[in-house]
Amino acid sequence: MSVLSGKKIVLGISGGIAAYKTASLVRLLVKAGAEVRVVMTPSAKDFVTPLTLSTLSKNPVFSSFYNDDEKEADSSRNGEQALAQWNNHVELGLWADLMLIAPATANTLSKMATGNSDNFLVAVYLSAKCPVYFAPAMDLDMYTHPSTLGSFQRLQQFGNVMIPAESGELASGLIGQGRMAEPENIVSFLESDIASKLPLKGKKILVTAGPTYEAIDPVRFIGNHSSGKMGYDIAKEAASAGAEVILVSGPTHLTLQKSGVEVIRVTSAQQMYEACHAHFADVDVAVAAAAVADYRPKKAADQKIKKTAAEFAIELEKTQDILASLGQIKQSQYLIGFALETENEIANAEQKIRKKNLDLIVLNSLRDQGAGFGHETNKVTFIDKDFNRESHDLKSKEAVASDIIHKIIAHYA
Ligand code: CTP
Image (cartoon, rainbow, N blue to C red; front, side, top):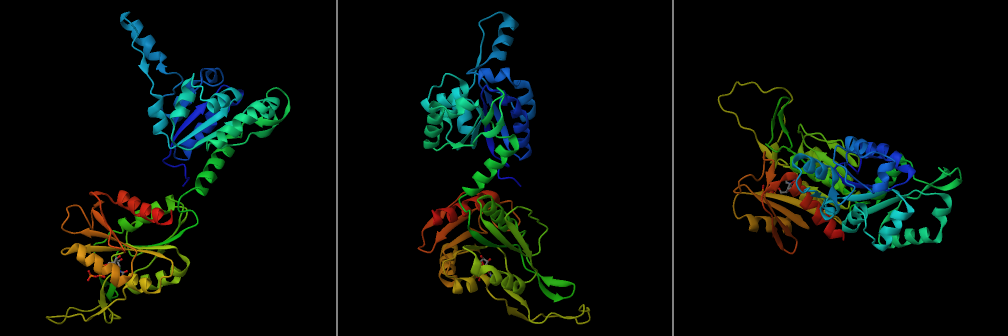
């Protein structure tokens, strides 16, 4: 999945011949999973129509501070004073996760560099708090003019990222640098630049998820109701933040196909223990979200057990505590565990931090409505190794996963 998936992108189009390529650009961004809103300078409309771009982006296209169409419709309807609709550049600027100006003409770049917001595109640019990329397009001599080079430099000093123009035949017939980067190249530039700046880039994270099944005989087992959702959401969020993830999953119907995530499927606590220990030395962080069976049948029967006896007992033995065993051998790894409690929640969780040598514990109480097994939501309290507490409201497991990932990011910040 592309890192652009789910991103809200404002595409600013200024008036150069390369604007005709923005139809492909919008399609590629949408195909990568982004939501695109297009902003055009008035002269960009001479090169590509708003209708084309609104159709491809499935969103209205903005090009002025007020909506012209609205004005005309209102005045023809009743002959009264037109009520033009104000297009809010601040809202659009703040909506965006990313702003891309392509093509960026010498004129628009100069306005951006000097803050001359006499058009809607530059006003949105000045309001945007997100990363801004610009893909210049202009003729050879304009591209190398000291004035243009000054705009490039100034905008990059502001933290904006330049997607350099490509070389080739230009609209004027001249040959050289100035052609807007091809839409495919712009998209791959964005993808690799974003990926390289993700907060957990270069970090490796081990996550355990789901229940474990402890065999009684070839057809029966001791298990629990864990769905695995919490662990899978943590793995997903970690990968979205740029981490390389090893997800050791007990039996669950969930699947996760995401670049950066390797899923290792196991059944029993012993198999989960072995998979975790095979990888722990290589990881920076481990999050134990699995509901590991604490006990297993001392001996699993080789054949299916027949119902002959009136009473039947299974002798159980303790499984290994995977998290505690990782706590014992950890070097620099940041170790996160979960605690699901029904009483004396804080005291029990703090005891687990000490006993298992954790850096952070995620406590959820079965006394809280909507928390724990089988729910789409969870209500957690974070307690760190110094016993600092942070209580969160009831939220979706995705949101809890995101909070956990933010704790990890903060640890490395
Ligand atoms: N855990 C583990 N291996 C086990 C048991 C638990 O890795 N054999 C991990 C869980 O993934 C969780 C944490 O330990 O992160 C807490 O598990 P929990 O079952 O709540 O605590 P226990 O230590 O088993 O204690 P108790 O059941 O007595 O509350």
